[in-house]
Image 1 (cartoon, rainbow, N blue to C red):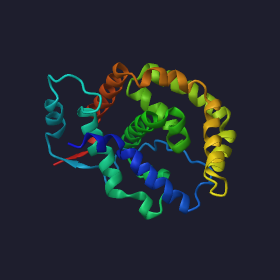
Image 2 (cartoon, rainbow, N blue to C red):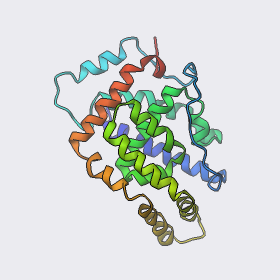
Image 3 (cartoon, helix red, strand yellow):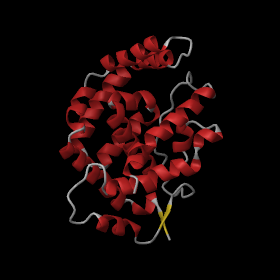
Length: 236
């Protein structure tokens, strides 16, 4: 199992998608927010797994010491999230990330939001997540609550209040950062300035990277999968 690939898959896919997104001149479009539509019966983008796959995946790690980079949460996310990105390749179809996520059922939308939040935050902080994926910003709060991540959901809700309070400013910063006519140093500085708009993000980052909290996050997201198996996969 190539754990390194699993951990960075969403980030690589996001980078490829962002390039495609920009070439289609979507960068100046008003952000659209992924929402639940009450439809949990969409199955065309559900990955297929063996009948006993969930329990067998759990059993592989039974009795083993927790490994932050190799656990059944990552096995779940690679199959149920990363594989869907890899097979569908929405950026090659000229679709936005929002367009793609809107094709998922409600449970998938929340699960993908949780996986993307983890990947983006681990890579560059909460601000990077909001900067790269504003379309996932709102549904992530709902997903965190549904996964019973109480502390994180409360802190993230404060972040959203700060984020939307300065949303026009952050949108302007994003546009500036993506402007190829501006040199890289100025573009980077415009990105860094965005951190000032959401100071509470640092509160999350104080504990999110710690192994103990990582263990809690992984456990809760894995339990989300276990509780919602019928809406996240097709068992054969």
